[in-house]
Amino acid sequence: DGGITQSPKYLFRKEGQNVTLSCEQNLNHDAMYWYRQDPGQGLRLIYYSQIVNDFQKGDIAEGYSVSREKKESFPLTVTSAQKNPTAFYLCASSTRSGGYNEQFFGPGTRLTVL
Amino acid sequence: QKEVEQNSGPLSVPEGAIASLNCTYSDRGSQSFFWYRQYSGKSPELIMFIYSNGDKEDGRFTAQLNKASQYVSLLIRDSQPSDSATYLCAAVNSGYALNFGKGTSLLVTP
Image (cartoon, rainbow over all chains, first blue to last red; front, side, top):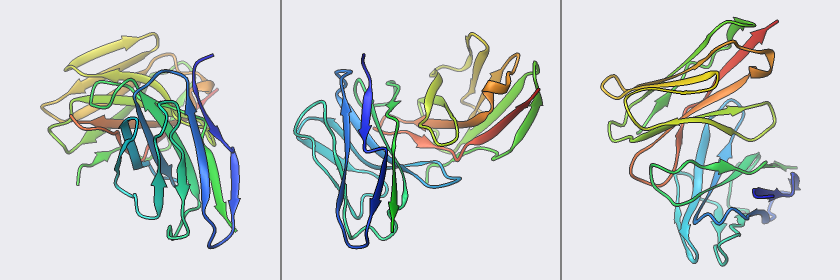
């Protein structure tokens, strides 16, 4: 069954902690993306990766870090430097980056700072 | 700033009617456009994409693109209560990621 998985579904973080959100895909997609969604808002791009061992900052990368060591995996770390991390985090993938490839989303991780 | 604008709604239509959702974009370099449906608490689900001027139909859904007016729309025919959701419009240029609008909330009443 092909798709994108994200874990955990819900995550609670204490102030000052780093947490890592998992994203895995078995669609053989080259490009992967991380978005953040706040209530009543559209999705904003955090980081994206077009190929293994390469990634670029999106519009709101401050306080976040990523890695892309395997094609299937693109984990996101929310660091203590992120001032307001409570949000819905969405991972997506596409066959390749660029304007003509539709992106498919995982189920999301809802992060709450206690 | 490259903007994608949508009316937040809610847009309320009776069951069986046509729902019309609209979106404008500011970046003339935008090449392709996507409509996603998002149920409350869930992730976005791709409904339609359109690259060329004109209409594109898929079942009950029709996407319309007018690049001269920088306008994209989504028509939902024979609207059902299960269509009640937030609809997100997104645009991408030759770059890498989707630029999303804030979404329009659709309510289909029985």
